[in-house]
Length: 298
Image 1 (cartoon, rainbow, N blue to C red):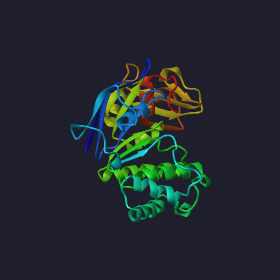
Image 2: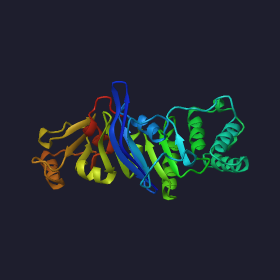
Image 3: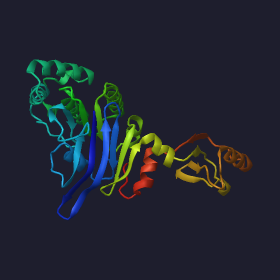
Image 4: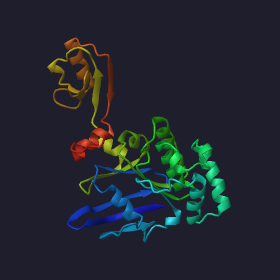
């Protein structure tokens, strides 16, 4: 399955929230959409789902114009929209039935997913009695219970501890391997970098980059040497201090054309780093270069 968004435009009065945005996502490839706060990510997702009307543009499903079949979509909204005083079981089975499942199939699916998420003990509990992280897992479970073909997660890592963040990463990889069509939006760029293959970066309502994350990192990532040291760093190294005691040097410049040149400079200065690694720029660093550091994602 392939879903294409072509020239999506949405205005709110005189404010253009999304400006002729085009990208696509497909089965078996995990795609991310990222941007600063207010860049148009959530508006894009809501327009894709038909929750708000587009002013311009169209949605194609396998090349055919038309809306998504929402019964085959699993949507995790950024805002929580479940009933806090209702039990986990009652409302999740109800939501699954709205998607076309029988009560028996919904109950079986519920037990399986509760076990998978490690929260089976909360099956009969009111939602409000759960921690913020477990409420997020319930919200996510609600989007998966009916076995959707299309999965759209808006800020799935919100409220989760590192262990459960890793659980979600592994889950996304499994769902992708099963051939689901997955789109994820998140401010957690280091986590997005672990799991996504394609990425759409939005800057001020427009597409700043759309394509392969791997190709983006080749194009924009460059090559860096990062090191930590407690001694003063000589100016001859042309090192940038990124944090107290942490430095990086850009390779491929006239001053430091390659790693061998850096090592020779290091030997010449007599500096002895505590740690030393060669790497490319992270998605976070590339993002900041593309969209600027004002209101940057943390």
